[in-house]
Figure 1 (cartoon, helix red, strand yellow):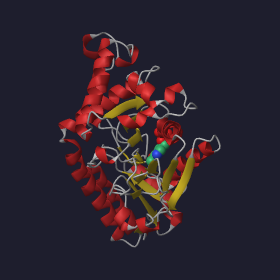
Figure 2 (tube, helix red, strand yellow; figure 1 turned 120 degrees about the horizontal axis):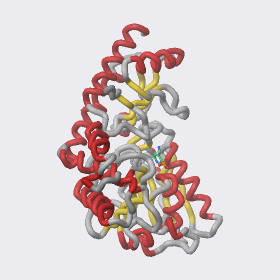
Figure 3 (spheres, rainbow, N blue to C red; figure 1 turned 45 degrees about the vertical axis):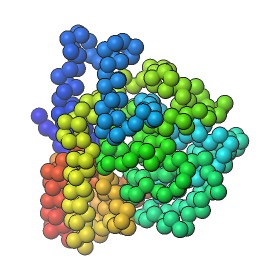
Figure 4 (cartoon, rainbow, N blue to C red; figure 1 turned 30 degrees about the horizontal axis):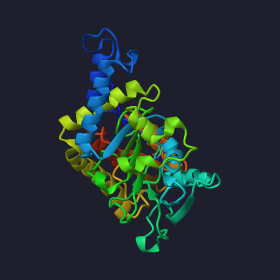
Length: 360
Ligand code: PMP
């Protein structure tokens, strides 16, 4: 069997043992004679899978009873609309832009101003390599919520400290959820597309403080209404059953391996090794302010962009896949989510040093 190191930004590498478990259970889940993807989401068997996944996630993140956990569809991108539709309620939302994803969330939310849903205020805008310092932020007097993206997947800009604002914080955790411990109580809403640290694409997690679910606009489609989804156990319609099941296996895998604290230590080691390699060389560069360098997505440029194509060909031959950077930033990007091992990052670093020696 050949499993190569896959540095794709998402859909991303899954833990091999999770895929093996899914494979072993694929045709006949626990003697039922069917696969999980062939059973009703209303069946007792499936409810058990769904409930267990939620319980395990609650354990991993320390999510209290005052928060709802929703397993939805539509990707994180649908949440760019769901959030104003559920929360804006005639007020003002403060948005911080630090890269492409928080920009998209802002642009989408802004569309709801013309529907009269409320106001969207741009607090500050970064250049994709830094985060504007808080003393420059133009916060509203009394915002309904504050939206930001703690990890910009494309730019590799991560905010490690939760912003100190005194309104509910809505955060797009798509590319950093479960990578490092956080205090859920600091947030009003945490949302994330699954296809990086959680499981396969097609599932979107929303963790929301229950008291914030009561103010949806009349414009909000029923299927996007948090309260309605909560009252119906995220099953207003057929959920992404198999993605939900696979995510449950990922949560079990994390718990079996020491939880978020343990994976965070490995993630830190992986990121430190990669950034050290970049910093110690004149051949590779990362432009992000070191204070905000992402531990999940590491963009880097080669000194001579004419070598990009060769770097990608050679790395692929060495079993290191999907290192091409996003077109917005160019160069390379290594996404080193939870399922990427330290050994795989060591292999990447060894390849980078070798490539530099040959071509610098
Ligand atoms: N936010 C962030 C931070 C992302 O990385 C992505 C996807 N790469 C999205 C939102 C959009 O997610 P989806 O494709 O699940 O809609």
